[in-house]
Image (cartoon, rainbow, N blue to C red; front, side):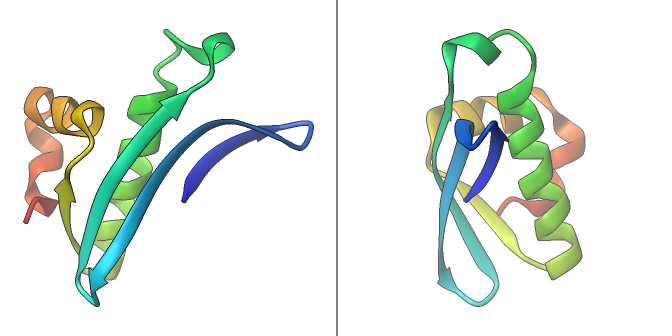
Length: 81
């Protein structure tokens, strides 16, 4: 899980699974109301992309939010499975 924490509370998270050693499936992204509109969801997806690039992983975005980010941001698509 990639997440944003404040004072011990998780305010935003992106969960994923690793069905194989080179594939990451983004399953869910959730951002608390207090962080909505601050690009936190995008930053979580971007962090996953950066991680995937460093680890030579491919991403399958099952999460509708993550999928929408990949649809909008062509520069992130190199990690798509």
